[in-house]
Length: 398
Image (cartoon, rainbow, N blue to C red; front, side, top):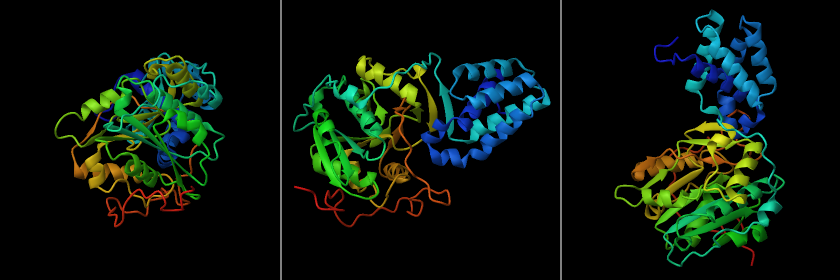
């Protein structure tokens, strides 16, 4: 046992159960397929060590959890049994060591809220469309805050559109004055599939035509350059983030001081399961709670991801050339942007909860297991033409 490894049996028992769930639950791979594949050898070590337990009851409980990883009762049963076992028994000690190595070294974790509710009733797109925003779009011409949301949904059966509508409804229920921030959605696709659904909830809907791979960086730049002329502060927000009522007020206040160029408002992202997504959306949007409670949901933690939500001063965004438009598909563009922000200005991190709504995974890996954009050198974006040209890939339909 390492000299800096926890000695509390309950902490180590929880690590065992959490890693077994991360390894077995298909929804964990959705949270970040790159990390899941990268750290799979650590998960396998824990699975092997669980199979080598001497106590048949403990071995059986571990198998039951692996066969039904979505069952919180099985997770708790294994934790209780392991916490009561002899931590110095060789097989138990080996399991604890393997589990702690996996928890220590990998970037995916399991979150089981203390008041987790497994009864989330699915929320449909139509149900959300019947819900008007608590505050209708009302941005003043000189609104100092711009929220840009890049978006595409052509092959999820409307799941991403449902998530975006939940995100927009949460943004339509803010403590920050509605006339002081504008919301821009940039839909990039071969056609404006979701215009009619989205327009009632935003200050600006932009269609950026691009028929092949999604280019998040370019879509963000389009939104900033076409609707952010008066903005002092820009929030680039993932379409699958469910915000709380003080989200904008809290993050604007953080930039209302000298020596701050931008920040990530979170450290870890909680990718909620499909059932927990339904529960959280129902609580926050349909029931009007100030925020969804992380203790009521289950999901998978992505540790220190750079891109689900970033706040930047508009001047710094333009100074660094916005986001790197060479990135196609998903993967790497947010990390590169965070690196360049950190070089250009004081760039902070905070520890707010960040709840990410469940959706089918996008293809992000090449055949060799690397991200699709791994060939682009970090920190090398130096645009020689204006960024955010809406007609860069195709003429804009009239």
